[in-house]
Image (cartoon, rainbow, N blue to C red; front, side):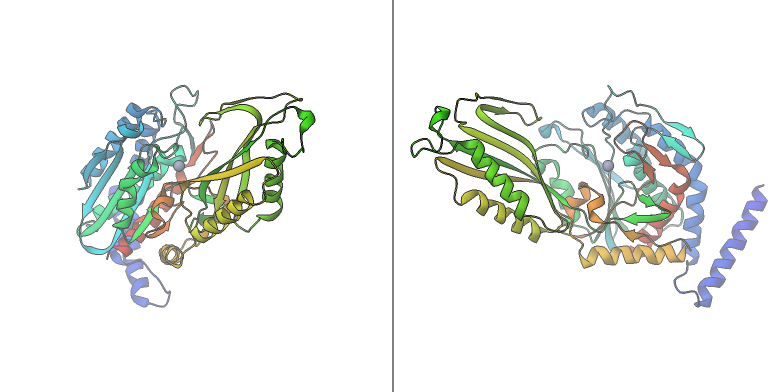
Length: 436
Ligand SMILES: [Zn+2]
């Protein structure tokens, strides 16, 4: 059996060398790249075993010891590939630490690979175990995104066996709190942003999206901000409403503002949605969504509160929409009322920059050389923000390069094991070409 495999490999190698020297087929695989591709295939069975091992360790975001246990397994894998590893503590934001693995070369572009080892499934979830059924496996984090981490590792292993890691500058940044980033972001994402600023290309391994036989990656993702609208008004007997001394009350004013938002703010690639609305007296609203209010039919409401969401594609759009909302809120408040709005930005937008598009084109050169279909840019409306968003303002980024799967964030999440080797080959070739 072994002899047969060696023989086949020689045939594949010489065929590829033949093709690459003919030059008539456009982009082809070099001899080194053929051996990288072959290594990924050889590595496929142990890669599934490693995925099973880390899926079976609970690493819910709010279970830091479990996240660290997953990280320790990964740390050993990266060290075996000649990476230096370090942990970034997140005690200050009550989260598990991030794991960073680095090779400090100087050749070619500086590449940053982003992953996360936490999942939305806490120890209390009934969904805890990896179950394989043919090419499909279910398990917490199977594709979001422990599968993505395995895609990274298999690619790096293949590059290592081809000697292609030597001299390259590659950083792997694996956060332990992607599903609920520690607050404030200025602390929990400080080092990730730093790593982005010190890179030329960022590849992120959120689950790969595949629809009707076509693969998609993200060159753009919308950012996530939230807004809070507060209205204060004079309170008193309802019979006095609209009078000069009582005014119109907080609920009419908040309704007026929301109507103008509804009617006038719409733009392509942008959404805004009020998620919580309270009006009356004694409003209490917790960050976790719990809220209470008092009020009576015969009392003019003295306060109103709205909390909402705002998702935009570019920094310009964010500034423009915020300004419009501000001027609506600040102008012509109803008699006896005063409104104010504040914003907080959670994720910056990942705009569809020429650099991101060029990175996808580079990946598609590798796809053509592999004789597999090209990857298309995903509609940014189809994917929410993630860790890649934090570095997108500073460097070229591609996201959604991880394992294909379904049902992320719900019990029954799957990963397609049969497609993981292809995802690793794409990654390995792209890294290889970027770091030459
Ligand atoms: Zn994820």
